[in-house]
Image (tube, rainbow, N blue to C red; front, side, top):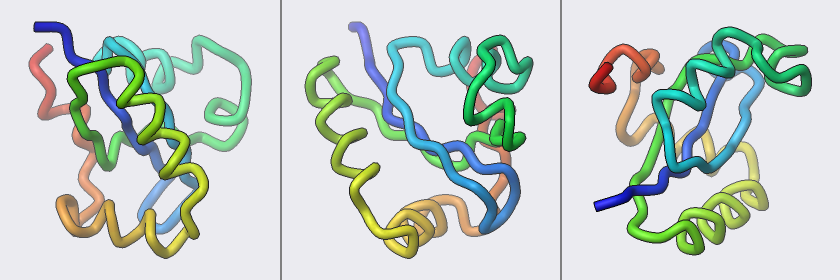
Length: 96
């Protein structure tokens, strides 16, 4: 089964946040870490995977991404800290 993911990256604990969605979480986070694409995340050093959520469809992931992007910052921080209180980089826990 194909999964789609919504994810949040951070520059550091309580740092700059970025929310995105993808069908290749490991590959997309690697691109952020390697600064493959010039833009917001490469400019601000946002490359630490601190939260992600799987979805069964591209549409549901996209809707959830847009929902989270509209949230207040504190809500995003609470979402992260619910499952990742130490703000660990979850990239290392993905199956490489």
